[in-house]
Image (tube, rainbow over all chains, first blue to last red; front, side, top):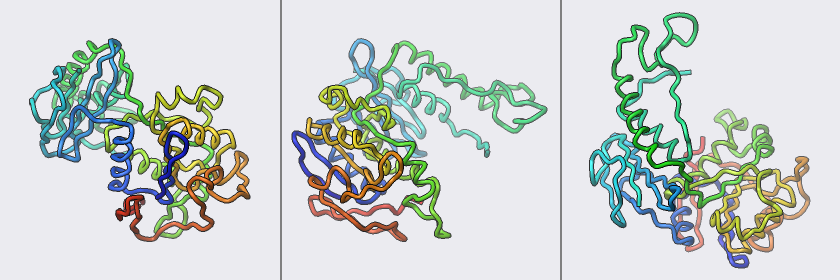
Length: 100
Length: 237
């Protein structure tokens, strides 16, 4: 796996296909490089957050727990609840929706 | 096709997942399972008896959630990552793909399986993905706009790639983008004739070169630029 600078950007060449662990590692590096930080996070691997912009410029955050185990949620800033049945956590196969 | 019962919350979760990625309507097929003809195993919101049960309750729960979400209006899904795929390369991989089956023959789903592992780079970190066919890239548009829209671009195994697409990828990085190239990108021309230049074509002066390759029979470790060892490819089969 090679990473080099080119002009104002970077090039990574993967000589192999990554497994899930390596994919996550590469993505974490890339997220840091572009200054991306998820507003909602969890220590549970099963939690995935999808974000989308609303017409008024705010963001909506869709939080999923793809697991039979409940998951705790952490928030980088206060959010408004749109769907949030178990505040502070997600139940098994739970989903919550927030906006900025 | 196998029909498995849904687990609690699955309908709602699947529907909201689609909405979060831009769906403006989610349909469920079908209202009740037929007592005759084909498709008469489980699958309807109501069973053949038309008596509401667990599936109907999940359907109602999902519909209520959709009603709440409709108040958000039209959504524009996050798209930090442009993932570039190639139908021609996929076709080529069906015949000479990088993954082998236990019997030694190529796995014809090699392109899809490797694309899945690449998609995980974004998905496991909450980065939004916009998928492009290599024929959908704005090759002649202002590159700075594309970089601003997608600060990360993953060019997934464009075994068949035009000079123009390779040049676009290079200009993208030069303009400030974070470019990820995966195996065999740039190997052949659009007519599937293998290039005679050193590989990876178009990037040798940037990332170095290779002239041997194989597929793996067992996982092996890879060294990252900061010297850490990582495991890889043991899940791609």
